[in-house]
Length: 234
Image (cartoon, rainbow, N blue to C red; front, side, top):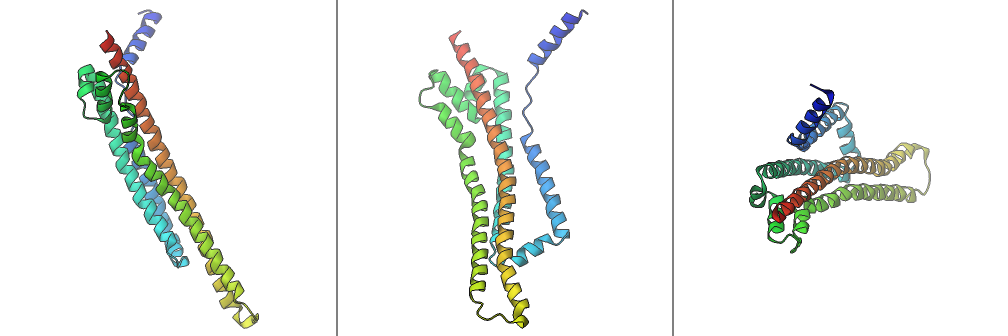
């Protein structure tokens, strides 16, 4: 076989190959495994006990619970987006008729394009609401973690300032108790800020990945929608 013929055959096979959706749920499971391992390692080192004991306000525990619940939601959302992408690809492979009757989110968009090719009644907006709408609330929750950390910082420094303000006469015999009171406020300020920042970064990474995957679903739906329109014109 000639090299040019071999190259042409490889290109033709690549063009006919079924597109493979990115394993979003698998990526989330890998991240979850890393988080569980990190949580276990911190527990062995006594970090969790230190965090809870050093924060009498309970803000650190609230941030951890918010992060855990949000991470589980990201897993559920990853599964849903992955299923929608599989349904989209399957409907596109079955042909034009299957595209317009598909129960997936893109199916409603294609059905609207089939009825009104000029994108009337804003079917693309409805598709965007399905793919990206819940992420807005998740991003707001992600910001809550950072705000709770800043709230703990304000409370910690307020406690520190109140303790300093109550000092009238310095007694060397009371230095140990005074130092303990001052470090309590400082510990609350630093620990809550640290936990809020870490939770904000890790959850933001998950939400960014969800947004990018949702963007890809919309792009694929539009690409197949153009094929649907060209097929109707023929």
